[in-house]
Image (cartoon, rainbow, N blue to C red; front, side, top):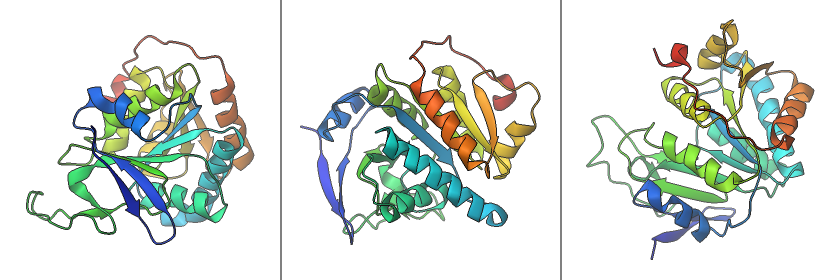
Length: 249
């Protein structure tokens, strides 16, 4: 029997599963009660650039509304910081009910009534709080952020089945670079929101972007909604694995 736990946040509760290995991920998702097939949005990125905070928050609000309108699942990192925090806040503020799944290394996070010990963490590391407005969490083995990247990709693949999925990048650093590569390897379209800083802006400037990658300015909310809806309404297709060398060099 897989370990499961209810997390009691101040205003709601979330169901959490603790799979030991990626081969158990499908069972873990079933334990969450998510047995249907869904369009899936994978939301990746890091901190929010202060100068673009308003536009970025509105873009995430737009993404959340699309998820609600088309009954999609959103998969994200789940900690209470940056992009991951804002999508949870937008879901709550707007009364949305779409499933929001956080995937994170168990050793690096905590929650109300959860672990506090940092004994086995690298020096200087702390446990990050889980964002309190997510509906589900998958807490997997891992000792550093980035270990969750293949789990996020696999979670999206399992949930989308014969539906469609899309990865959306906001800002982002080296972990997001890894996330992008894994999405490309799985033939998953990428939407890059430019003018959000760091990796997103780096990719937006590249003239030889991968054909699966679309760049949209973060302030173009109507275009963001249209492109996400289009990406999730196309017929599912199997792409050949793609190596985007400029991303990983």
